[in-house]
Length: 133
Image 1 (tube, rainbow, N blue to C red):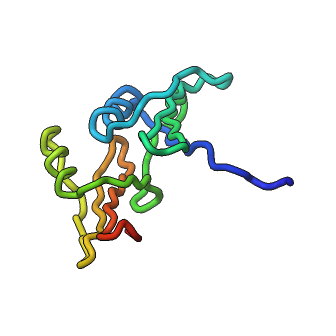
Image 2: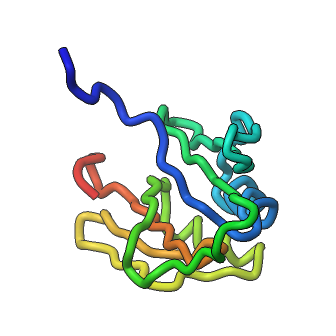
């Protein structure tokens, strides 16, 4: 069948590749899967969350215009066990939520942090019973 079968990765272009990779590895705990240079000259690093199949491709494209992320343009969302525990984890890096946390009576909730380059990261906690966020 001629359909898109599976989402493989999402690309985010950045100005400072190593600073961004360090953030995703150290703060979010993502794993670097591979890195290489594309035929167009882009430096590419692929990252993965421990329980996900989809990859995040971080791209540095020398000679391109600087990245300017618009407000509320895009974000990545990650599940966390506890927003409160993640808040404490962020504090060890001198970071804090940029918004939230917003927690419903069932315990589900979300908060945002700012990644390097201005991209937003949403952190989501499941409610009691493990249902919806």
